[in-house]
Length: 85
Image (tube, rainbow, N blue to C red):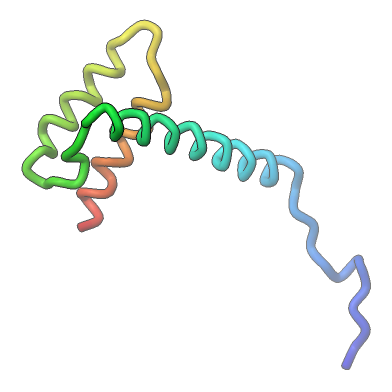
C-alpha cells in the first residue's frame, strides 16, 4: 500500500468552511424560529392546499422593512418542501 502524505490530501478552502459555518448557524436560527411559531400554534407548513397562502406570506415578508431573513428562509423552505413532494 502506498504511503499517503499530507500533500496528497486535498485541502478545503477557507471560504468553503466559512460557507458551511454560515449555513449551520442560519439553520439553527431557522429551527429556533420554527419551534417558537410551532408553540404559538402555527401549523400547516406541510399541507399542499396551503401552498398559495405560504407563497403570499413569503411575498409579504419581502415587503417588510426591515426584512426578517429567517422568516423569509423558513417560508421558502416550506415551499421547497412542498415542491419536493
